[in-house]
Length: 304
Image (cartoon, rainbow, N blue to C red; front, side, top):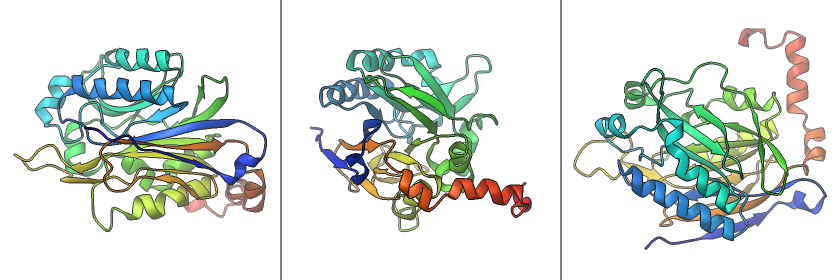
């Protein structure tokens, strides 16, 4: 039995007028190599989210295939973008924007990518991001790196008609300051970050320290969706034996609006985002504006 836990947190910035978004991250376990079952889980969760008034729902990294699937299974079951029609239909039926991680097979080259597909509330595919920073020997041995030029924001229209300027990153991408900053300086206001983060003291630095810092320093909201529990692969070694959960949603002040525990048995955590509610905080700490000024003055030439 899968548990359903909905945590709705409201930012203090919601007191002001402006665009809002009821966003959510889903945390749970995928079934390794069982694409049909994982697709069915996504479609059922999207329907439930729509009934609860959620406007944007993010699933973990590689959720359709399972991050712990074998290399052979990934090669056998990798999907082209057109293979996600069931998710497009679910998004359209529920009027929910959906982001989901999967193993993508490029139709032109046949190469595999660790990808995040984002559908709007009409079911249209508005972004397909391929992971830029591959982690460890396993990922580098299976996937191709996404091409330069991908770190560009896109407009996502909610069912309400509100438009959100979004950027996509996957797991290891967010652990570098540059990808999030590249999206922020192009106007991204919400980062979608699915992950397959393992358990361990060093790993926990990411959800508890790195993510809120990325939100604060770039004036962005972040949705961070992780897998949980032991890998579905007791018969063989895997790159990540246990996933640490701790999915979370952050606002541009670095505050945690919602966070899951290490294990919740399959849950949706939600927060209402005040997309226009942080002008005072940005004015007080104009990180991006000062970045542009110092770059123009030559202070950061070593980074060029």
